[in-house]
Amino acid sequence: MFAAMNWSDRDWVELALISYLIGFAYSVYSLATNRFLTSRITFWAISTGFVFTTLFLFDRGHAIGRCPITSRFEVLVFMTWSMVLIYLVIGSSYRLSLMGAFTAPVASALLFFAVVFSRSEPAARRIKVNPWLEAHTSFSMVACGAFALACIAGVMFLVQERQLKTRQPSSIFYRLPPITALSIANTRLLWVGFILFTVGLTTGFLIGGRINWVQAAWSILVWCVYAGILVARIRHVMAAKWVATLSIVAFSLLLSTFWGIRFISDRPSL
Amino acid sequence: MNIFCFGVSHQTANIDVRERFAIPDSALGDSLNRLAQFPSVQESVLLSTCNRTEFYIVTEDSQLAVEPLFQDFYGSLAISELQHLFRLQAIPSIRHLFRVASGLESMVLGETEIFGQVKRAYEAAARSGTTGRILNRLFQKSFHVGKHVRSATAITRGSVSVGSVAVDLAQQIFGDLDGRKIMILGAGEQSERTAWSFQSRGAKQLFVSNRAFARATELAEAIGGRAIRFDDWEEEFRDLDILVSSTSAPHAIVTRAKLEPVLRMRRDRPLFIIDLAMPRDVDPAVHEMDGIYVYDLDSLQAIASRTLEARQQEAQSCEGLIEKHVHDFEVWLDRIAHSRIAPAAIECPRT
Image (cartoon, rainbow over all chains, first blue to last red; front, top):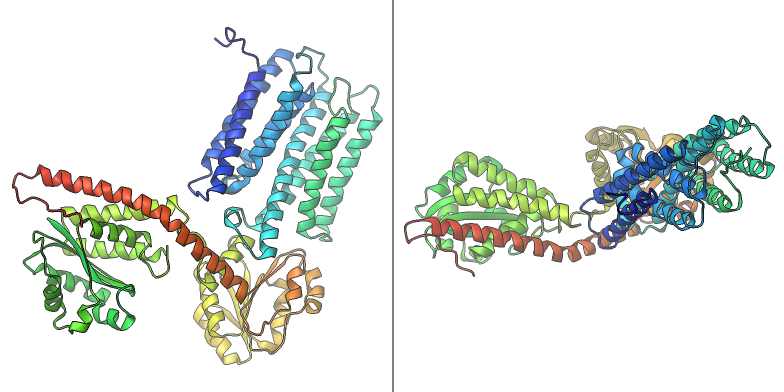
């Protein structure tokens, strides 16, 4: 039936984008109208989007015979999938208390860029698989998902912090998780992302072939920024507010440089 | 059959009059049995709280004389006391019960305690055998309405008292209060109320410090906490999570200079300070420090007032929901009225 409709695996991504947009729109509606029925609609919309992205990755992976992270389009979808995966497993306490409202727009934005960029990129093709490259890119991508969630937890922390400091808590204040829980979540997600990113970086050195030192230097810079945040956290020399702020800055750096650096390519990044 | 609701409430009578009509829990069973002896009463439920004493009656008498019934029930009542009575019949009485169960008739709009009180009143009547088909259905419906209104609207959201607002804020900072160390500094009336609010929400590590140590010991024993001598309270600061301060000191006793060295040892743990004193115990500059949140009486009162305003706005949505349920109940009453063979069926005047 799909063949008769000229179905392509990219349509899964468009369906996923619609699901995330529904989740995002419902969250905005829920907050704007002060309706406190439930945020489960957002959760189910995000879960549906996750299923669609999983179907895309499965179809694309089957078609090209490897992990589908061979183009910017695939990388963005994989990054979205990783972020939502971590969101779904992080636990109901965050999931049902507005983290979905913050996750849905980020997922929508990533997939929107994916859909836009996919039009100018060549169709997927079968290429020779290097297992170290596969490990390097997939660990790095899941690390990006964790960093994205850390960034979201950081945004939520700063929203709470601002409301507490201005002494004017609004309705969103009572729906967000406690500020200490957000601080803990922020730190844990930074650790998860950092460990995965370290594995990804290390496996990058094992790919073989010529090392692209521009990409290597960029990856090491990102690693150093996150390491610095975590060291400051361990030594308690930085207030939770600044850790949250830096986790947003670091993720913005990671995303903004993503377009300038060929993070993932057919050639090894390290 | 006719449904009547009559009695006194905080809207019709002051506390002196309401006391006269109040029925203690211990006397509720006897009162229900006595009410059932009246020939005109087919079904009855008595709801008696500190803010209202209400009689819900089902009778075949469409012109039920409420005042004589009250006179007989209470023994003797002055005319001046009877003028505080309100009297509702049929649909308005149904609407009234739904509003009561939803907290819309409460002195503190949207409060939830009344829901349990209505439930207990109904259970007492059901145990005494004074309810029947109509009141069973009506009260069951009122519980459904109460739950629906609370879950579908923001009528219960937030707190409207200074103590509850403070505890809400503490929970949004720390989550569970169980393992949190809370110090009550100054054992005045306001701080005592706040201490009880914390205790009722699960706080277990409560410390009380007061210039008069005996008073600190007294309050600490009452709330299940520990008394600390006033000279020693600053030593506890390092491990403290929440400070409720209400001393009569003429100047600030918690200052930035005093906190800065302690802050380094606290390893980024947030500190929530509730300053209930007048003049304030805490230097306002402390609020600017990272991880420290200071709320004084004015800021807590402002949040409580905003919550109350929001609840008043939300009441409009509640009315819409209640009307739908009133209509449903009206349809049910019509249906059972028409299902009766006898023409003396249910009278349900739309007053």
